[in-house]
Image (cartoon, rainbow, N blue to C red; front, side):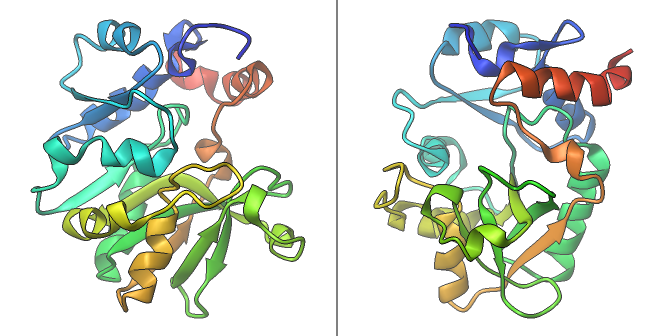
Length: 231
């Protein structure tokens, strides 16, 4: 992002992008919202001081799975459905989240992934379906994917629903033997599937909504697409 400012505090139409997402989540009246913070965490805390959220600290950035591990003290005993969403995907909509929850419940899944179909899936984890309408076998990160897998255009958006107890049953079993030496949250999908549990996937009806921000150009792209939602 060419800046020391935490990525989620970069602005769209003057709004830190994490607040755009949180406004949607607060409106949906979740029982609780936990924000995982790391680099620049105190700035994030200060920015979100008026929001009804709790914080978990990830001192070392070791991947998305590791971030979820850091919420154990707050979340491990919760019975219900947990949404995992990325703070750099600001325009994830209420409609997309509601549809994800609906498929999760209808399929009685242990986990459900919100996917997207992109013409250019470069950099995204690929969805490996299980053959039936909603079945998901695993997600393979781009850097770990073969040339054949990279031809798949259905990708992981980074947004999931989990049966919370099932999530914390497997989260400590993921490893970091991969190209980035990180603990991928996506590895829980294969673990749950291989345990004989139902794992589902549903494509977003508006794929652009689930695009994340990794650089200034992507930030400005989302501002052009969705900035009018903030006016």
